[in-house]
Length: 128
Image (cartoon, rainbow, N blue to C red; front, side):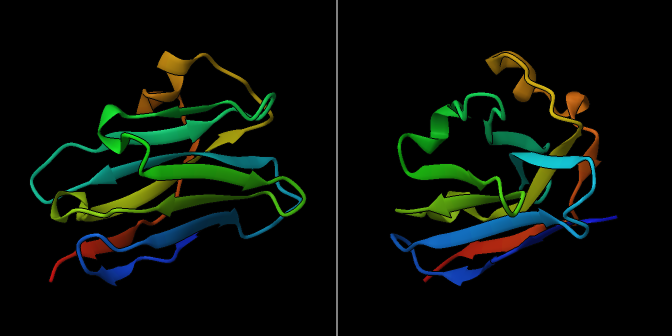
């Protein structure tokens, strides 16, 4: 069973892009809930997460209302809608999943060590 992220590509500054993430086997005990990103030469950083129990969302400060995370529980698929993209948003975006329907507090979702599975990453390039 793999975690598959898709939707990356090239977009102009100010544009929008939508990413999705799903387990290859929908019946698996793998729940995509978090997004991280890694720019060249940088550490992987938290972008946002959504809690399964109450769909509460947590975002990094740099998101500032530009990005929205959502889930389709029937499809066990997570989405990241990115608007007002900036060149500094250029990075490989990774989705992360939990094994089982676990729920954490805000600070835990920001720590990549608490995730059980990682997707292969999808490249987002913001450039004119």
